[in-house]
Image (cartoon, rainbow over all chains, first blue to last red; front, side, top):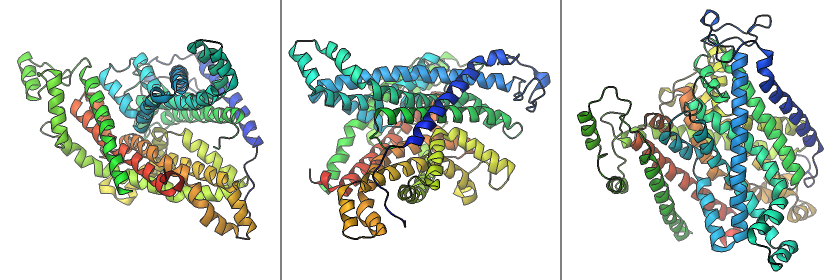
Length: 284
Length: 307
């Protein structure tokens, strides 16, 4: 605890460089995931029992080895990465859309109605998200991708709603909004033309942070067996398979675990960088 | 203060009622029942089974029965664990889950707060950069990745610790699960403590204290510490929810006989009463912990207390 007390928080340049590098690595990883079918002759679901659980080898045709059924680990991991990325992106888009409209309406309406809307957000916020997701998984058929998307998106919109409401409350008092109201512009038009463009910055930054969160929710469910079902794979279900066989074939765990960690870490770094750019005051 | 706390606890009842009611109807309205997967079941047997569990009554009656039993603290019989009540199942598992969660939370706070203060004071140094790499990675690594990797590394490769099992909470068995559960929490605690202290250190009253000639140690520990920890305290409520969620995974990964696995198992088997029971119990725990964090916040921050 010795030493002097640092001065107040200033701008942090290295963080921006980290975010830019992370963005490029992320682009490279996505390109790899989507180009993977061109890079390997193996389909992710071709069963080849003659070559089951073969060890990763640079020279062989299975560079990342094969699983218990002889499926190529590289092809399967890349398929899992594609599924996780697409699910994360779709769920993040849905939850940002819900959160933005909910927050903008609650903030602009204000008063009792706005407070009641935010009270709902508070209650949902306080409960572990697995409740909702597990209830939905209990109710609906397992493996239905749409239900899975709805389940994870329905817990992802809460923070966006809070952020947008805060911004809208401030915007409502601004002169240009008041002027629009005085000119008789209908409420929905004020929201769309004047409020939403002004909250776009923080929303985009937070949306980038929502994607890894959605990927983790989806993987969490798939890990527990409540998400994506065979033969389709996501990173979560691959980690779960890998954990089951890690005693004999640790590479089955290492490949999807590394991909999942890399993709969430990179997305978090990019999102943090964007948030700093749009809102330098938020400490992280 | 006591009356205020009591009023807040009573205020939780409607929230809990809403949660239980919503969960009850959503689950019951679902297609399919708990006995769908029983092989070759005669219609008469199924009718008897449903009658035995009260599933043949109208939904409103079932709801009334469930709520009446719930008020007495009875969560009903499990559909899948024969001759076992949900109370027994959860009563068996909950102490284990609670011990696991409490140990992880304690570890995260005892290590995270001092580390967070240290990196805030030595901001921009090597330790600070190392710590920010650690926090970013720890937050990106979910428990279901970290757990199996730790088990593989320390359990199966190095053979330092058992890779799975619980053995009544013996220390050797508890290390890996607790570390897995604590790591992301530790990362958040560090971040919040660091940011909190940096924020406070920029305020005028700290500069005034420095100007009066007080040493850095005294300024930080006596003047800055309490307000610096406020964001952390308000995060502790959600942190409990985070730990509960994590414990589902950790219990699955390490084969720990806690209560968390019942939530997943109940969902997989459509064991309605078990899922409902878990939602009630974990719902009460989270709501109480959120309330506790709120009250602690008010106690620490005199500006709120006066309102």
